[in-house]
Amino acid sequence: MNPAPVITVDGPSGVGKGTVCQWLATQLGWPLLDSGALYRLTALAALRRNLQLEDEVGVAQVAAGLDVVFAPGDTGELQVILDGEEVSSAIRSETAGNAASRVAALPMVRAALLQRQRNFRQPPGLIADGRDMGTVVFPDAELKLFLTADAGERAQRRYKQLIEKGLNASLESLVKEIAERDERDVQRTAAPLKAAEDAEVLDTTRLNIAEVCQWALTLARKRQLVR
Ligand code: DC
Image (cartoon, rainbow, N blue to C red; front, side, top):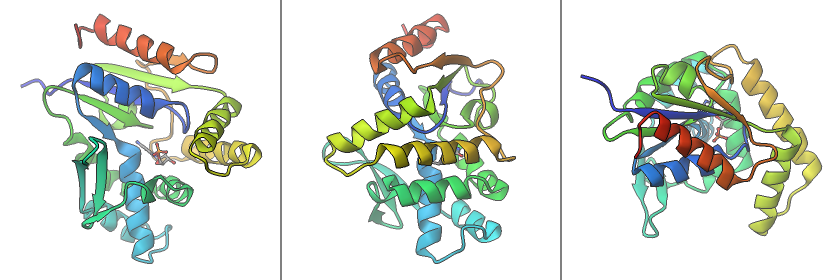
């Protein structure tokens, strides 16, 4: 039996994958796998158990045993429940993001999360958001998208988001953080961030989000994944 179709969307932090994936998921009526959330959840759970983030065996055990539920909340937004506790905001913090990027470099942690991610592939189809969706998790995906943008532009976008939310932000430190995270995601030996050979690559530096969404939808139509 053919597995359900998957569209993978990979790329670096702050490139707009989340927005494009949510939009595609709504257009196609397919669920969304936010694989970054699994790495963030693993990091948060490990920190809460007072584990060292370098403790590969310990953190991989945490990843394998994650008690997590993704449930629609009252407003329709997906809530993330870890060990019975709502952690949707906690996993979005910079602390969780940085810790996630450290545990994501550990091969045993990646292996522990692999099957959990593949289990999301169910009819009618899946939109998979991450770094290695097209290269490692779903190498046989029907459509692979890879988004890029200059680090400076990604820092600007993140800065705008934070200011709009009324939060304090420094553009200078965002540029530094994004560059550091890119370096870690690209340089790691386990599933480094890179486009699959058969991925459609788009540089979004000078595009707005609507243009990127249209590009993705056009490709999905060409592959007859959507009418
Ligand atoms: O997309 P995000 O910012 O929520 O991801 C958090 C971290 O997890 C990021 O540093 C990269 C890592 N990650 C990964 O290594 N592989 C994935 N498929 C998704 C995220």
